[in-house]
Amino acid sequence: MRSDFPFVAVGRRDDAGGPVPYVGADYATATARLVEKAMALGHTKFAYVGPHTGAESTVDRWKGFKAGIAGAGELVLYDPKVGIDPEDFLTAIRSIGATIVFLTELADAIPFKRAAIARGLSVPGDLSIVVLGSHIRPGDTVTNFTTYAVPREEMARKATLALIARLEGRAELEQTLLSCEQVEGETLGPIKPKSIS
Image 1 (spheres, rainbow, N blue to C red):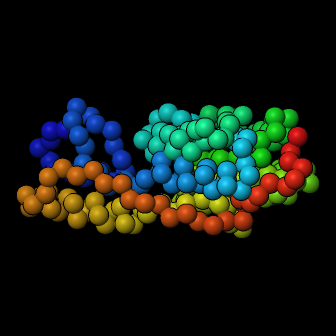
Image 2: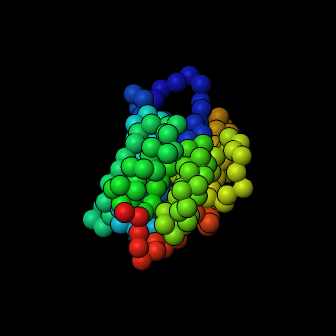
């Protein structure tokens, strides 16, 4: 992308008439690793809540999820909306046999977990919940959800350094993805011998 003003995007950006310089988070790899961890714990029937199109970070999470379940897992329920009805979604999950739910929004995970507990389900045990990425929006929860930490401060710092290098003519266009650290939460575990049915 040609511009009179040097810039470096914070977050991965698709090409816009040419390559866009950025420092982003590797959501795809982080998501795939969480899927692989879930499968190692015995989960094979997955549900996913959140869009698969739109911003690059949203697309990357979906790509990582699909890559993670390829060949060994099965997506049995998918809802592209944000702001699901937790009761309806829980009923659907119970009827189809999913033992784990991946949610892109913490705001959906909180009421969903509450609905599961209210129905007498153990989390984890009967049902595991994974939130895809650390979220900065506040939520009224003390639950330590299984997730990954997005390296926001490191992204900003490296983007600033890359921009300075560009302004000084010391660097070519760079596209960098930083690793997300897995956060061991209390909402992912092995399934019980009698899974949800």
